[in-house]
Length: 219
Image (cartoon, rainbow, N blue to C red; front, side, top):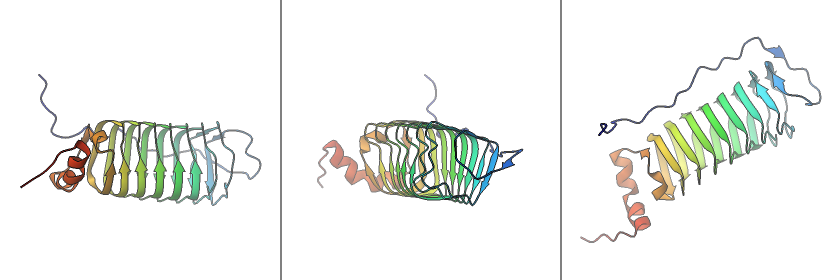
């Protein structure tokens, strides 16, 4: 029998540094974005549905209402961007960094994220229902609600994060490291199977977990 692991497997992420960037020329977004630097560009309500964003740097851009549904985002960095509402449902992200962004509601259901890192980012509501996440790292983030209902998640780490509500009903988790997070409420507690917690976190969750499993405590 193989030995029981003593720590979860960490996410496998790479350094993302887009190079050889051309300046963005304002105009209709009729094509994919490739190796372009966008600085303080207003992309509010931009229609990027089904497009490819590859090797790009978006710095301090306004993304409110932008639609990246079914988009393919590869080896790109979003830095200091803001959006009250961002749509990325059914998109595929690989080797992407989201740094110091301020996001409200993010529709990210049924996404495929691989090698994605969020750093110092605030998200009010991240709807990742039925998503497939592999090698995702969240560092120093504040998330009001993270909804992983029905999601398949492998090698996710929350380091120095605060989460108001974590929803994991029917989630399938493998090597999900929650030890570095402060989580106020967990919904769907049985979905935590495959995650790692500290003894202190488990103690705080014990009453809710007992209620979820129908355990009665006396004495």
